[in-house]
Amino acid sequence: MHRITQRQIQHHLKRTLIAFLLMAAMISAQTYKIVDTGQSACYDNQDAISTPSEGEAFYGQDAQYDGFQPVYTDNGDGTITDNITGLMWSKTPDLDGDGLINYADKLSHSEALAGADTFSLAGYDDWRLPTIKEQYSLIMFSGVDPSGWNGTDVSELTPFINTDYFDFGYGDTAADERIIDAQFATSTQYVSTTMMGDSTMFGVNFADGRIKGYPVGPMPGQTEDKQFYVLYVRGNPDYGVNDFVDNGDGTITDNATGLMWQQTDSDTALTWEAAFEWVQQKNADSYLGYNDWRLPNVKELQSIVDYTRSPVTTNSAAIDTLFECSQITDEDGSPNYPFYWSSTTHNNMNHGDHAAYVSFGEALGWMEVPPMSGNYQLLDVHGAGAQRSDPKTGDPNDYPYGFGPQGDVIRIYNDVRLVRNAETQSGLNERTSGSVMTPVQIQLQQNYPNPFNPTTTITFTIPKEEQASLAIYDLLGHQVRILTQKTFSAGDYTLIWNGQDDIGLPVASGIYVIILSTGEQRVSRKMMLVK
Image (spheres, rainbow, N blue to C red):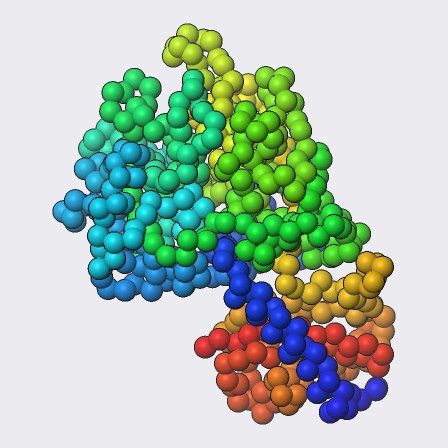
């Protein structure tokens, strides 16, 4: 077997360090970091399953990718700092300070906007009502949608927000609200209207895990403006602002989030399971020169919604004009734009039979107008940019007038837009001047999780029988650990590193380099141990 000299290692690590520093600079420049969804289980069309492997059904879903994990600091003064987004939040929606979170704490949209001007907490007076993208940064899909639940003890429920740091209350049933009436106000208003011409605000419901458009005035049959819970925010005014670049090769990079997107879409509607199959085929084909595409999680997908656009106001999907968006014929026979699947299961009381999607066209629903008349009208009930959920399987014809109180249309077959991390290596050779990319023979996947503590999983591919070694080095070129060194048959392999060196001592926190080498080739990945 060909031995790697110390000089070769130093040269390789020097290049790796430069690449890492460039990557680190890119990450530090990201003003719109997408906090991970917190979903830790994988699902089939109904239930939680063991983690699928590449090539298997349902491979590539939310729980198989680690984004920026939530890191909060309780400042002890009624504020919570999100160390990923750079935003500081008020800790509780208990605005009247009585220790209860109920209807008395809620505000109308106009009151919530005006309240930011006079809100004072922890010595700060620059609080604002969050945008929908700021507020959605807090959502956690470890929650369970209680829709249809008939219990009374809400301590049995799991909301879609981290209650280790934030105070939360469900709807106030004593005030004739539903359990799921835990909608939070934002400053983002829909540029069109919903229902029968209602002015509309987008809000996050941390009880049922959705974004919907809500009227800023009274609900039907009511005289009081709709009421919302409120969390105020301050800091990082650039959060939620995209910085798109057309790469000229069918991809769009968002420098603000560090994500690279497919410029077009699937141009065909797929079931959730088929969406994963489609992504795997695109990777097998090295689509657009990359083989690490994935189905975006729902927070990544929502990040590219352009809330200044809508089918009615701009005659387009709610997305930047750099993107191409397929046009569809909706349930009323009118031109519209698709819902897009995410890789995130929307867990509910029936387990995992629904997945989250984002509507880039109108979020349609069948409303009985007037009520009890038998006359159903298809309306934009929640606005372009809403996040709802669809069954993963079934027949849309079984839902002729949709589902739920607003008759949400049920499609089951939705479109797909690919995403990948812009700063990661793809397992392919570097782009040549002719922009042609060819697969390398050996492949080393990014370790998972990364950052990690104390163990991480490393997967690699050997295309033919040959000798190979997998070793770990520090950034000075010192060998830390040889994980394996032998003759391999062609195939995929997985090893686990426990964060120890060759003599069994735990290594320090820091950046390490994995190098997979054969007699002819060498590939590397960077990883970070954080204790």
